[in-house]
Amino acid sequence: MTWAAAPIDLLDELEVERRRDVRTVNLCAGPGGWDEGARILGLDLAMEGLDISPDACTTARAAGHSRRLVDVATVAPTSYPGATGLIASPPCPTFSTAGKQEGCGRDYQAVLDVWTSIGWGIPPLEALADIEGMDPRTAMLAIAGTWAMTMENLQWFAMEQVPAVDHAFQDLVAEFAAMEWMGFNIVQVDSRHLGVPSRRARTFIVAHRDQPVDVGRGGRYPERAMSEALGWPRGHDVITRGQRRTPGGNAFNADQPSWCLTGRARSWHRDDGLHLTPQEAGLLSGFRYDYPWTGSRTSQFQQAGDVVSPIVAAAVLGGTLRRDPTAAIERELDLLYGPQPSVQPSVTTVDGMQLDHVNALSTVSDFTLF
Image 1 (cartoon, rainbow, N blue to C red):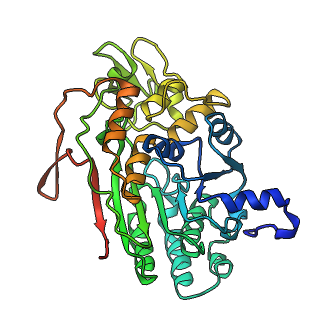
Image 2: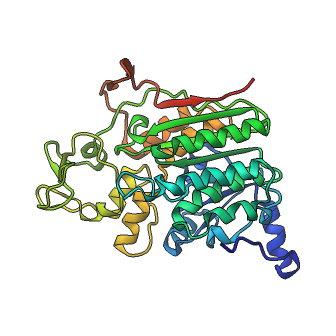
């Protein structure tokens, strides 16, 4: 771990001034999901994204978003003394059920220990010593929480991960309650419940220092089929793994929201042989068709699979900053896919309770303090 900002006297004066003008830092920012979410809402967050992927940074810059190509683990929060907002999307493979979940064992507790140590007043660099030798992707969760706990002028933050990290987020909320922040939410969001034609379930933690947050309420967003979004005729299946059979199956019907996109979507093809393109993958994630994906075909699919959907980002940012996102999201959905489908909201049962999807965001834990 080499987390240390360059001394001020070694930085170009213009660079120092530029960083002072950044009001929102976006860690592991990727190709632009959060940036596009802010655009949907008409918010100017004076955001700079940090990411280690050259292709993701190039894509974001081509779309008009600020990016700094850097390993977040080498940057200190003091690099952005004027920032009042923080967004973070630390890598999920070590926690995801799609992987081996290496981060859900001993390393999970080490992440919690870092945050607890900082809460007790231990200097961040000393606390982060607990993650030396850890998988860097798991360590990034601890680092993101450390930024949130130590940024001097922070007023709000939003962070996302796979649902397996929900308990860690509850521990982080407890730390912020002890720091006397006012508003908190932990919410689970599936992009298909917000009208995006693909499934992607993620847990978000949001907080505000001075006001309640409200990320648990949304408008009516009927589910949208993959075939409708891509202009395909009805009745086709999508083959995801060729002839290789897996416990989850290797095909799904396109007349529903698609399965969650990952980098492996590069091999998806329709049952008549038509292959999915990176532009179509981006559209399924909530990006405009002409979004400037860059890099190899594999890299473009990886970016489209890893990214936060702009529609979901708009919903979360709107609730965090007390700006109703409903009209803006409906307008964006119409621009991307045309008028909303007439499909009725689906119904599920959770712990014996019937829940419809009129409310697109499912509140896992509401810690709002008044």
